[in-house]
Length: 413
Image (tube, rainbow, N blue to C red; front, side):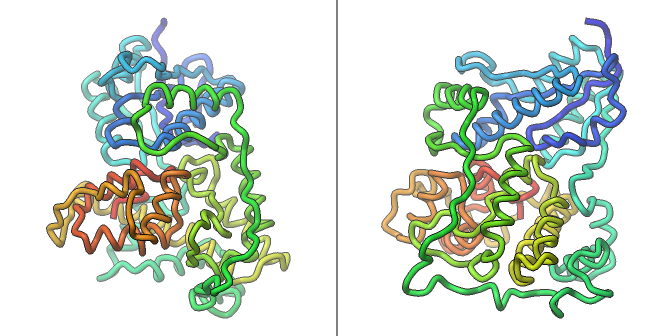
């Protein structure tokens, strides 16, 4: 194969058709490189549905890029685990650099400090320049967050969130917050009451196509001992499916989302939650289209301000804030352990076998769906891990293994 100009790296959580790494792509001289690999699938003991989601979404994105005329060099894992055993992302990339002989490597900044460092080391070993482009997916880039944080003695989510609301004119009326206040948390803490939640709206499901079914078979064959299962996999794995899921949430659950966003009830898996976080974090959805759709529902009178503000806060506030903190504080951030906690993650967090009802119910959701909403994550599983003295790095790795929406920048804190 003749030498190429740019080998463009697209990672598994960068499935954006407008990814900055693709800017200026020359179909005659450039090649996209994507790779499923053993190390990323096993460096934490990944939930089977998490692996299905990533690999199925990556394969669909590969096909979409090829349909648009991009040449894609894609490394797919086989069902035989003896093949690719021990081969990590850098090993596979090194082999392709030797074949393609690119003049440089191009990528959009990673969502994982470890992966970013690994790819830079690989480029250096091959004496290739690695051009790292900004990730346009987010409202706030790390440099802007650093500048904001440097002006303050304490960095507070509420201050950051209000600043982004003003900057992007989101839920604002002549410089003032829509509805007369910034925060509707007091209106968004209802319980389901003793009678329970009653009938809940159906969450849009997506039947696996042939490509996704192939991935399901691969995961069950190659990783039979991993936690969770693949039964009933129904998540969006393409941009079109993700946009359909967003529209379904806006119409059927957003109007009631706010009051019950913190509510728990045994056996209730999704309630009024969006179930969009995995699609967002793989970049199948853009946060702006999610925020814009919610704001449009409010402006059309289809959803109350408390519901819309609660949803917008999760994306514009918390999601942007934790990413900013991650890049500001890494790499030491991941190793902090203020309480010197040293216990391993409880066995029940892998198999759900416990007499503690709240933990058992949350874990049933995690094992079945690779999901738990934020109260289950923080106030049930997180709080128990804290008081039990679980090592924070071990607990962090457990999140990365078990939640479908987990990317390192999302959960390291």
